Image 1 (cartoon, rainbow, N blue to C red):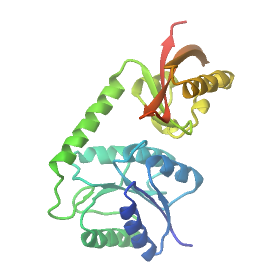
Image 2 (spheres, rainbow, N blue to C red):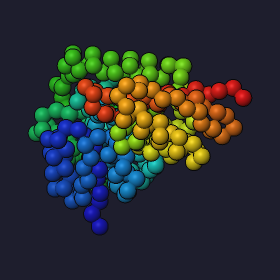
Image 3 (spheres, rainbow, N blue to C red):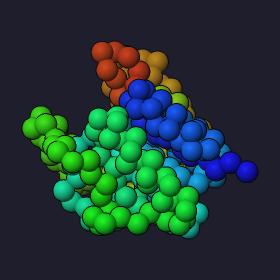
Length: 263
């Protein structure tokens, strides 16, 4: 039986390049254009190897890899992170559960590197690298603008996690795209158990109808900036505020803020 590979990247041309390389090595390849779709594919089927770009919209590669590693052990799934820049903090790659990181570069070099990587995996069942966990094509360096963008993204994530109120970001199909540290604390769930879950499934059955109505109201009424409601969650009560996530008046989803109320 052919081995299965999942390739997740919002770069169409890189996905096609990598898929062709994998198919030539005998893999059945499933493609996904972002982390959100990647999680859906992982929920539908098991894979032998996962390639995931680190920077993607909605659910990024870091979140995807953490989800994948929580679902599949190292012996079940080999995870290869893919980056368009050099990765300096290698502990970050190890901590999220990736077996190694491949830096994007000229396709000729990538073909040789990835071909050897797959041969290594096929022959030994594991990836053994000389340079710790990083496969790095020679003479590749990040552009300054890209490095600055990564720093800005890290800063924004730090702010997001430091806010003293719970925040859930919900896509327009009503699935959770992101949650900050306070939201996960209030829900008593790890992020991996929340990502791509229907937002209604996050909360108890008895309050789901009111939550759906609140989401509908702010979606239908442009003049309604937010909708407040309270829901029971275990032994405590949560105060929620639902508001729209819009770009140029287009519906991109919802933002749910939450606070725990004292008994």
